[in-house]
Every structure is written in C-alpha cells, then in structure tokens.
Amino acid sequence: MAAWKQDARAEHAVKCNLVYGIVLLDLVKAFERIRHAYLLKAAIQHAYPLWLLRLSLATYRLFRIVRVGSACSQTVQATRGITAGSGFATSEMRLAVLTPLDDAHRAHPTVVPTAFVDDIACELAATESILLTHLVGFVLIVCNAMENTGNEISRKKSICSASCSDVGMKMQKALEKFRIKFHQRVKSLVTGLGAGSVRNVTVLRKRLLDFRARIGRFASLGRTSSTNQRACSEFCGDMDNNQRKTRPPMTKHMNHPNQLKEISKNLPAMVSEAN
Image 1: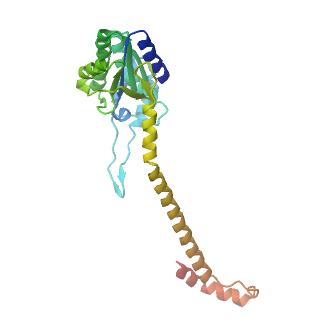
Image 2 (image 1 turned 180 degrees about the horizontal axis):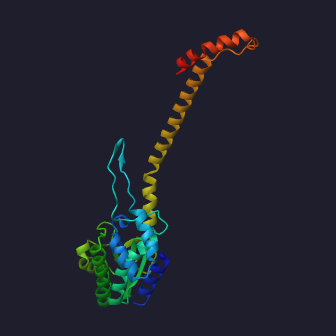
Image 3 (image 1 turned 120 degrees about the vertical axis):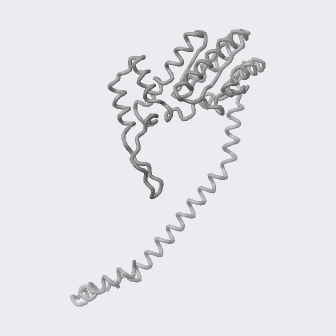
C-alpha cells in the first residue's frame, strides 16, 4: 500500500475542488480467524493451486499439545486459522480478502481499494453525494462480507477521514454499524495522511512525544540489566573464590607420586564440599 499515492490523491482532489474520503479497515486476529472451508472455496474460485493449499492446511491442522508451565493439555487440532510466519500465509490472506473486494468493486467501480496483508484501504475523490453513496456502499459490502466469513472488523482501529469535516461526520454516521469513527488526520502504514492540500506532521510529532515519554522505561531496563550483570559477576566471583579455596595448592612438589595419590583420594570429598 503506497501511502504517498493516497496522500497525492488527497491533495489532487482538493486542488480540483473535489471531496476526498478514505476508510482504513483493520481485522481483529485476521490470521487466527480464517476458516479453512472458506479458504478452499476462495481457492477454487480464484484458481489457486489446490495441492499447495492442501499442503498448507495439513500443516496447520497437525496435532499439537498446549502447555502452560508444567500443565499439559490433551492432543488438540486447530480447525481454523493460518500461521502468520508461514511462507504461504500472505497469499492465503489475499485469498480471504480478494472475493469481498471484487464483489464491492463490481458494485462501486469508482472506489480505489488497496490491501496490505490484513489492512484494507478504500478511497475515493468525487463530489459529496457520489462519495457518500459509493465509498460508504463499498465499505459496507466489504465489512459485511468479511464478518460473514468469520472475520471481525476492528471497532477500535478502523477509522475514516475526509478533506471536509462535515463529509467525514456523515461517513461516520453511515458506518455506525461497525463503529468507524472520523479522524481529520490518520495513519496509513505509520505515515501521516493529510486530508487536504497541506501535509501535516501531527502524527510524527505524537510518535516523538510518546517515545520521549517511554525513554525512562528504557533507562530502567538498562539499569536492571546492569544490576543483573553485576550480580552475575559477583556470583561468578564467589564461585571462583570457593573453587580456589577447595582447590589443592599447586606447588613444585606436586609431581611426587604420594601427593598425587592422596589428592586423588580426597577429590570426591572436595567436590561434594564445593557443590
């Protein structure tokens, strides 16, 4: 998802006396909630290699044991969800979001959708009436389709923005079912999007302030690690001193056979004392 393209479209829309609107959707536990049966249906629809999907699903459905401390569960099997670190996980996630986006785009072809893994952006530059009709309709189709397949639209992270505050509030009201709230300045892949002709640095400034507030935590972690290192050094020093006390003195007469025999006899006792 190229955030600079979204920013350029927003600025170009304002220059052309149009209204720009964007909706950023986020899925809750997107990888963990995908149903395997839905993946199979989407793979058949989009001509995805079924033998490859079968291999992935067989790996995801391997029997496993859940352990918490010393408590172990019985053998369980996962019947939904894909592994985020898998090499095919992003392609399978694309299968999960491709059908809803295609259906919405057929109904509202003027909307520009972009997807980055499980983050979906829907944007449109048009007049107010066209934007509210098509952009809101596009988003409703996508959200309903995703939730019908077992996923959940995040009520906290999904937001919308517009170059006009009045239009943004109308979008928020139309998308009230999914609690998508209007924000004048939003983030797209950690990039501040300016809903107008002037680029903003509010997002970056907020991130810097948040980082400054957490500097003390980093310093405390550094102090904790230094304390742990000091304690380990002291412990190792004590162990070394104990070993030196229990270690037989290395003198120039150590090569004498009688002394070697006597030391070998006392060796088990010295080891037990050291332990």
